[in-house]
Image (cartoon, rainbow, N blue to C red):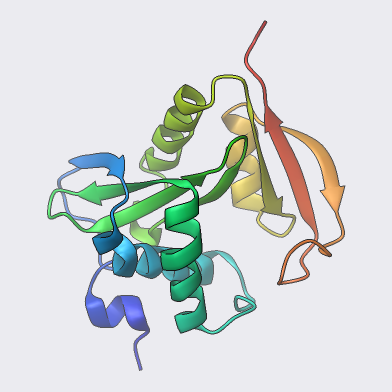
Length: 168
């Protein structure tokens, strides 16, 4: 049986030929699309499941991540959510792109926006097993500043802390 994103026809649908993508602040109505992207991206990236069932992840995104962070979404020209980024005061808390949109510059656009919104600097955590994510963050100027054994995350996955600071 197809997962939630496939049933809704959003996060895992093929990218259209048009590259028209806008980034805007997330709204409560974006909750389903945010959940679709987060889950589809997770499953395309990791060979382990999130620590919580899909509906609990969706609830956490809708009731904790979006309202308690500065949350942004990327939408295609049909208004479908294809990416999300959540910023706290000094961290990129979440950055996920729908699998069909990876490699099209959307992650770089989110990072550019994050730097504009947090010009003093940013940190983020990335699972050690996420080689593509680590390579991306390093390409866009983040530097590894620490490692963790997984005790701070629900999946118990070793992680790397990255930092970006503006040039003096």
